[in-house]
Length: 397
Image (tube, rainbow, N blue to C red; front, side, top):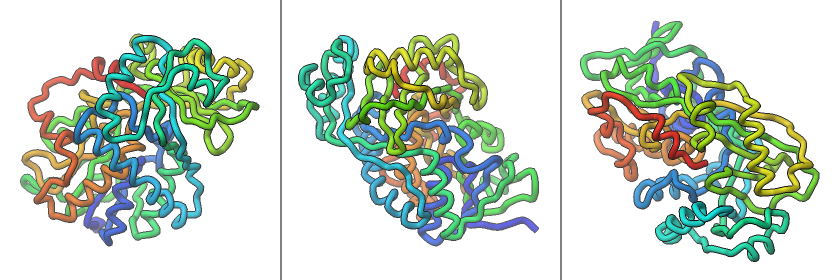
């Protein structure tokens, strides 16, 4: 006999587990389908940097959605740590977004014009940067100082979301979903490699594997694979007291476990031929990426010549053609919601995505939740082919 749930969530990454947790908090009976294990996809190699700066948010509802998710994290982390006993290595600190060349300065200042309406920030010159962190390169131009950004361990977050949702009654089903079950225009369940799973609503949050369901929906789910790599270093000097990033050189963050995270690749000039895109998850670290990341890091923080490489992480992110997530109902279908394509912002946007999907389901699928107009699947209704190359080159992480 087929299992029956109120909602079946396909995919137990950060997005899927966040949705399962938010639904379960509301007393909704959830089945969480995962073909491997919690966080085995894009989440496992994510930096966990929760920053509102950069080019991944645009003025208006996009940025406001990012701000909503950012503000949700402190309470969410406290809830998860209390429920599971896990330390998510969460930290909130001031951040610097560095300009080492004029093009970076121009980009940062152009975005500050509207970002400063939402977030406390101001431009500081090289002298002021070095007063805050004298070990940074002498060749920098300046930086935007943000009063607060955040970072946590993305894999621990994923595990905690999954565990907390199970505590609230979610049933995790370790089977591969092979298709959707339809009854007219309504989706009523999921075919798996074992028994079918029936439900009132299916949430497709399968990251890179989401396009596998577009045939059943007769609707495009344009998600491509953007590879990314980063490294963890052991550095014997004092930890950085600020969360550091730059448009062309990525992030540099002293984690709460003592390691220094540096990276990551994806979307920058050198990636076009070697590291840009595969057709599936690519977890193979490359020497090219390691050398490039380390050179970038030393350009920013020269003393890292003395650091020791501990680990190199690699994986692919679910890239949408416009770099924005795909969240909401599928036109012409009932009983199904998409939550995928978050590109490099899956960790950051997990709370907002989970809130929006939960509200939509609680409302019987009759009214769109606030803040997701830009992210609706309907924007791809007429798409015949997706330009992931151009989208990937615009990624800023």
